[in-house]
Image (cartoon, rainbow, N blue to C red):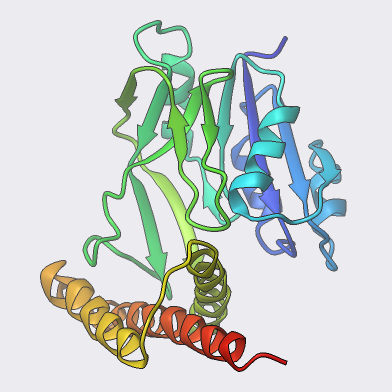
Length: 252
């Protein structure tokens, strides 16, 4: 039985998956669960020596739980395709696998936006629980913004996980559209009701929270761009929900 399994979910991640898997070379088992890529994602993953499986998309939580079900290691490391484990973080991870005082470990995540590492704006340190003992944790069964639920003690490592979610502004726009749609669907499923003004209010607050309350202005021009992107994402999340609710009321 391997000591450490890495799991990654993908769809059209040809630009990312190779470097991601290279950073996971220290793991005895690497599993990629793909939901239907139309690019070379699966081919690249196989070339890198990963086990590649297809699973139809049901949402982020269900997809990651399926990947978790395939892992055989005593410990599981869950990484997104646009994240990288540095050699320092890999060494830190290997150093705690034999510890008995924790069933889960969090890392600070250092994310970049249009080429700049964001030290403010609510993006850092942004601790994420990504390493856990198999059988002691699972992912929330939600469409988007899934998190790990660990049944045992959780500790923290100091070495950061590197994250490249937005390399170009076009990536921010695409990400905003995908996540706002998924979030609107989740809100609709929960029975949430909103008015036309809800999106405007949430959008304005999202900008102020990122740029002022979380001192995003210290991240320079990229901090302003991120604040606007967050505002748009929040605005469109609620506007998509409002429009969907209006269409349901109209009926056929």
